[in-house]
Length: 597
Image 1 (cartoon, rainbow, N blue to C red):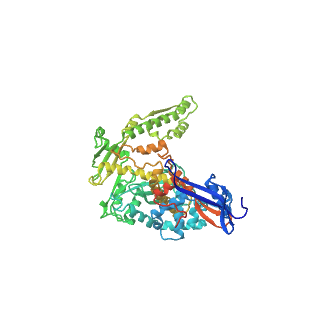
Image 2 (image 1 turned 60 degrees about the horizontal axis):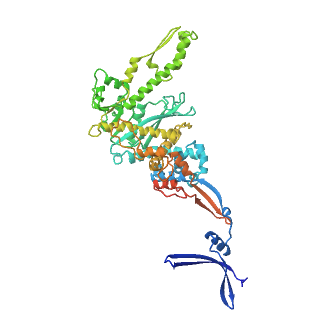
Image 3 (image 1 turned 90 degrees about the vertical axis):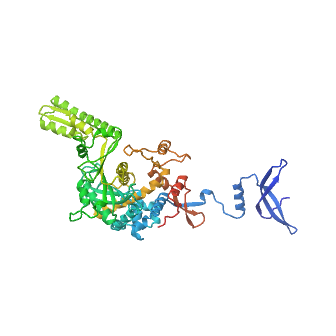
């Protein structure tokens, strides 16, 4: 007889160690719905139902409901009151903290928080300062660094604060990466680039040779100093019409006088470290020779006229030197006390010959319609013919290779084959010059050091387009322009380390093969080629571009969760993906729920 009184509850019964007739050990678990009642003063139990066949989660729900808990549908259990991208900001901030960047910027305070936020934002979402100010409210970076409510005046004040601290920041980086303990070769790389400005009132704005191909735009020049691996150390901004040699002289003064580095080997491109600059580098302010002149050495390359002079009249540079090798060390009376390392890259020679042939043919194709118009009498007069020829013949910068004859009724164009052949003789050749003794740096090492300028070019690509989008520059005041470039340089310093740390997750070549011959083109490792072709690692996880990995990290959100029936809100991270977990492991940091200052 079933009782109607008493409370119903769930009872779970477990039996372990039961051995069946076959000697097999088995464990059993059962669940029952039971009612408890009293009969003649004794507590008795009655089984109302056997729940053992139900799934465990259903049994848990019945048990919880009988205990008085309020059960709601899963979709209504919590409310997400807010969600912000978090993973990318937390990861870049963690790397900045690991590198000691906050302390390097200066003492703790509002200005430093804003400056650090501007640098990190440049890595995450490069944009104008006003756009960055709005973006801070849409990510945990703004809230956690306390900059989400900043004004434009706050940002400009922080930029001014940062620009005033530039010398100290760069001196700190120089101690880390250029001092003898960290840089036994005592070598630094330097190169110059340019970017255009919007507006006409910046004192630094000037017309000059545009490396961005923006003809007619006012621009600035900026020189980047790095260690031998291309790690940015310092940057200097110059007027837009500054030449390479003047910029080189300025950076040498910075390295010698502000960084206090007594002995360095400066590596610069051809046209930058000229004979005049070398003489100026070794002179004191009064024009006399510096006592420490011999402590600053250089590695650079000769220009084409100088190479041609070495080849002329049975000079020291002859093609026979390269019959069985592509590198030879020579000397010349024109460069006393210096070593000349001549190199010939056959791959580069073939490429230049092919390019020249294509450009010459393209120029002739542009001129062919003009010649036909003159022959047909539709274009007459030496003046009008010359104007039309001038519009097209310099399109591919090959005008020097053509002999153009114009009359009132004729136009003839012929190649200057002797001149073309003379230029072709230099294809693939380059000659390096340096006073560094062979005991300190052999010929192959000199070539490697010079070719390492590719790292500075890579940094420029990251700063200008790939990652940090320095250009165009919208600031008007000189100190703001310098602060903007400094922010981009420090952001490049961050990305340099992030790209290296995250190489296992990206298409970056983690272990580029050593080159037996420094003259030959660099090669990617087999592992990097496998990355590019397979696009997934052995576990099936995709490889990312650097920007793609940052975007993926941004999907790791921080959510504000409120439980139904309460006023309590807690912060909770989304479940990280394997790639997101690995990204933090590679920089040696846990995934924080809050970015700490």
